[in-house]
Picture 1: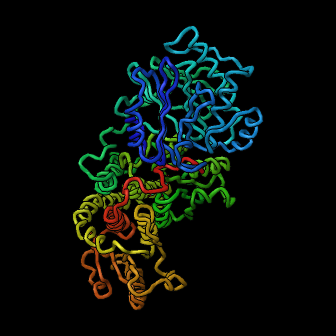
Picture 2: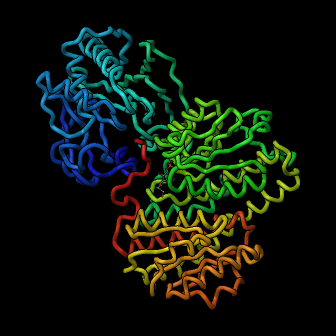
Picture 3: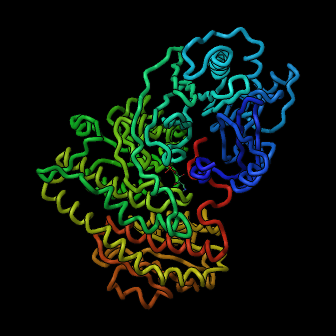
Length: 617
Ligand code: AGP
């Protein structure tokens, strides 16, 4: 249950567990938050369970109800299974099973798998598997071996993505797992072992973890783990150390994870910047294992990501294009491969993902690699699928981000992309060493400036209380302020459930300004007055909306009093180079959305309909 609580942020429509003891399997499920399952468990938990599997659900097939909650069981209750992913040929398999007389208890794609396993186990001629079953012998070992054979036979028929955990009363102390594209990590404890979508679930018990790769099966008992390859051979264990301290995955004294994570941004950005320069003052990204000669040969960069990650990529584009003088495209991961993009071995893909498990982005990098492109992943989760499948990884060091609404990941992603851009400029000779040192020095000033903006947070929280009844908010930005407008609007949508839209400020007069009516809240990110051509145009945009009755909320640099006469509310940020401004101007927008969600009595960390990591396409 502790593990499920750590992963609840990944999906929380409903939850369930199955426990195995010598009597058989006990399955408990509840709709809604995990607390409801906790309650059900307190009344009916078997006291001598030897193994268990659990699941918190983000509904893909079938409404979030108790009958659709996982685990799903075979009709005779001897097999229980949880699943993360989508079985794309479920309808076909369901029809086949119905013909054999199976009746389904749920509307999920998952349920077909557990019936197939039961049928394979009981009736099929299976490809024998006779490997070791740690800590088991005799009947139980043979049952576990047959279960491996059944699982391998069934997964060979599945199309789509899955992480499956299987428990059976035939072999009570054994858990089987299989994965294809969806995340799975095994934790190695003392006389106990763990399986989870994310190491966060067990990191308080052990930081020793195993990578389980595509189409592999893991057989786990309290005494040991066996990893079985696609061809049935037992594989050597690939152990690694989970590197984040579990204390960073708790709220501590903060009322919500989001508030904690907003305030962790100075540390996250500083940690992301740390140790990037070698003794000669050159950027040294040893984890970017792509030959410099290849980096010099690229003629295009495509940045892929979803949601906040894609907005971080949009900020990065301005910097990387300016520094490296090569074209940079930013494409939503879910659109990328369907637009038939022009990708060659001279294209560098930058995949941005906090979780490293976003299926849209996983599929995008796979498509790009099939076209011969190299992929650099900017991820916050070491050992995640995207980090493992990419050719190089640039880790953000934000620490675990639990709140569904991404905050510290955004500023750390932007920072990491700046580092990548400067590294490319260094390798390609676009910038001299002393110039890069200057850019890095100014980046290293940013964490303290973020802290300064956080220190001014009270007036933003006060403003949020005045917006309790807002029904729509417009965000405007220009240049690097435009992706910040998109990000600010996304925050409001996802945790306050208010319609909000970010626009390029210059785009307003081409249509969207028709939205502006008396009192319409319009939040405007104003560039530094040191970039006059940008600054004055945004000032004009503020006047355009104000002339139509807008309630103008302006984010402007300290000392820029040219905005005062056109702004109803002003939030100030310390001066930084134009390209770095998003690292500061996004902060008031994060605080605003977080506070307004609290004012409205909404669930800040686990907003409705969402999950932290969208591991299905
Ligand atoms: C951001 O607040 C949202 N939670 C969502 O847009 C998120 O950024 C997106 O799903 C990408 O997630 P990733 O960074 O883990 O790939």
